[in-house]
Image (cartoon, rainbow, N blue to C red; front, side):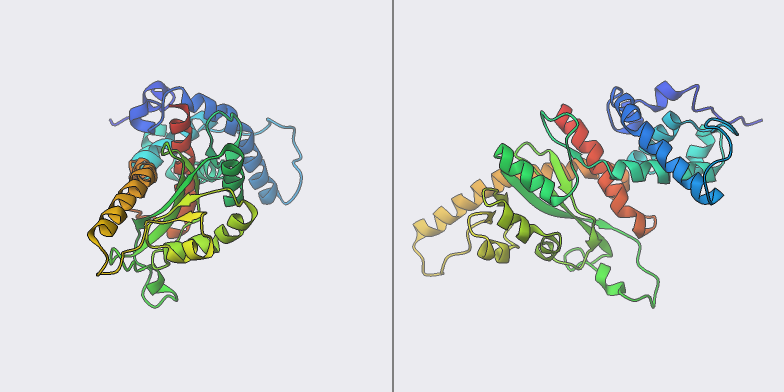
Length: 311
């Protein structure tokens, strides 16, 4: 007879860094931080199901077969290794629907946390304005870049199907814009958008132009695909120098190559941040519903920022 393995008995093993992708001390901090918000989510769902206030005292009724700590652990394992819900249900000794609901709850709470910043316990950056305000107050030079995640092709005949076709990868993708600091620590990521949209367009839609106006001392290093931002915000949106005229002297070309190399060396840290994100299997290729990818990416970005800040 095949017996299911109880997650409670092996919690210390499943909470290992090899399974969760975070240090073994980190889950304890997450439990302390997220227990109350999770309870609020549960009570809100119950209130909606009842259609009013509860009639019994708090704590009455059936107990959760999957307690909060176990829900957090299986969510971390799902984000890190993309194990099917049925496998996680077997490890937990519960029904698959319980695991699906638990992952949806915890993932949403993780996505709302934002990104941690160094030497500021309790401070988290959730929107682009927060990042610019922090950068101006601390004198941080920002780096911005985008990454693409392959997704499933939309159903034939659905409107907007072509919007997901990336001109660069020639695949159906969604793009995420990420901002990091000089140490490669993730500070912010947007809500994602279809892969056909240009990086500069996405940044403008997030309000980067307004942030440049309100925080004139902030500099953002960009790639050479954003000349419009450099033109509209000189001295703040910094891109590599353009290609000189063909008849320019050799020392002009050499100076330009040296400047591009310096710019690339400073911008490489945001590439390191993107590489940290892609170590989580769910961001290598997304095979689930596209509507849940933004929350998944923000949840992983917040977890990665915790690790890099505390490293």
